[in-house]
Length: 98
Image: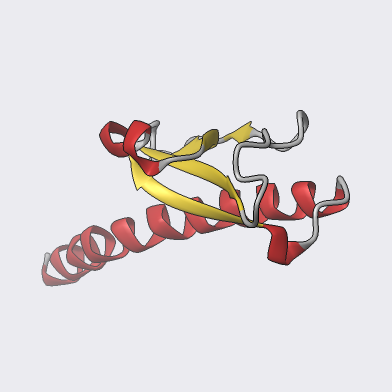
């Protein structure tokens, strides 16, 4: 019984870490797609923001994660900051349910 309690406790602690890693994985995949489309890595940034703050982030939403509670926002660096993200950059992936 004690072993079961420890396993449940470990699972509860590890779950948020796994979900965050999922967002980082999605962000990394989108990052690579944008770079493969010819945008230099220094020419843009990707930010993970809460869903309710995506409009204030000042960029284009190109993906989501954590069961759509987090958005990945693309921002172009430099003088052409209003340029849209490459069309094939976006992806969406929900974190696996545990």
